[in-house]
Length: 319
Image (cartoon, rainbow, N blue to C red; front, side, top):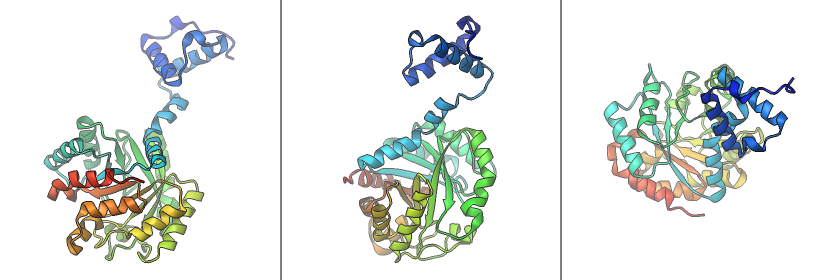
């Protein structure tokens, strides 16, 4: 079928630019292509003109966020993410968080929440994309939280619980929308750790968290996620937690699981308040125990100086 050569004059200027961009990305020069390769690229160009997807390149580009996380993990580089709940932040506060993020080496903006009412998710993501080059990653609290304007989405499976809907049921319902959106979806094993109080996520998910004094259970759960083919492990104490995830739990998961580890939960704040430990110190301890990315929620806006301090603490960890 591809033996008949399609003349390059049949391609629009836009398609020619598309060819060049894709060829440059792949390290291909048109002059170096064989006749058959040129014709095949011609059909690809025509498909581009017809608004169809060029899957090999789009898959590569959509994997950029994960590739960066994996590369940083292999180098032992620690990263700092600010979690923004669209329901909890107004336009003024969002603009302030973006400014602080740009000024203080925030590596990721995570966006999402357990509820997210109305179109706040879309508005928040668009605002972030307009004002910063920091990657925007959706941390979904429901199957409705899919938006193609973000850079990536954590495709979560709650592997610490026994609720089948959050283990695979909701994922089946969300999969067609995620696939159609074209967003980079990163398979993530979500592990809920007891933070000393009932949390929003434990209530919404109707699951029991892993006891914080059982690091071996957390480690085995993470290993199961790894063997199931997941790319990341996200350990969370949840919104409303009274204490952060113990370093011993993080260290156990890090020791027995080779995946990048994300650690979040408002316990990073509340432990600092309750026990007198400064939050940057807790962030440092969390990274030093084995976390690759520390996630802190937008309550940080209450003390904006913490963004600078936490960022410095996270990026100062060396392994």
